Image 1: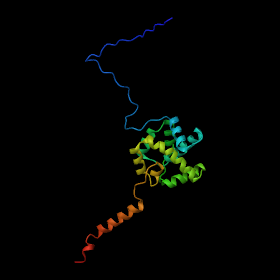
Image 2: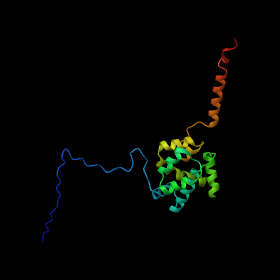
Image 3: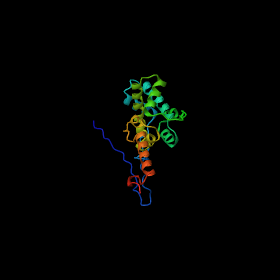
Image 4: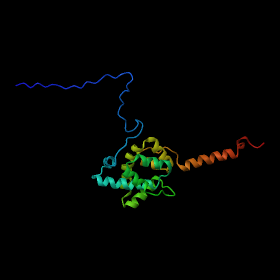
Length: 191
């Protein structure tokens, strides 16, 4: 016994020159924008980065690190970062009142270790595990602006090289320029 199958095909009318062309599906974000991710996706990325055994452990790190970062960051960078984070993470981040004097990167890690009761090494690991995926969500331009706003040490926490001169080097160069400017004819001898 043979079964005969027929394919049903739908016919469409050809596009007329006046008919609008079909639209492509809208993209979720421009190609240059960082990928949007859900809170669950962020936790999985942090769990992978930190090699945490459970999702709950990753969530503890995300909450602690984003709250600590929320105490440091102000202005447009704070608003833009919050907009790029998943809602749950953004709420934790923005619930913090920014400190009047921001901490250096190392002070940030020490303060977070004190607040969480962790060791400095573990806390540094947690910070890196959270800020690496956050940096990918923020995108390189925003991360550069965040690092520029904060005191030294944050570039490394975000997984970037610290390429700006230390404040003492900058101060020394400024002082040397001021001395040269104050005595413009010192090298010509007395007249």
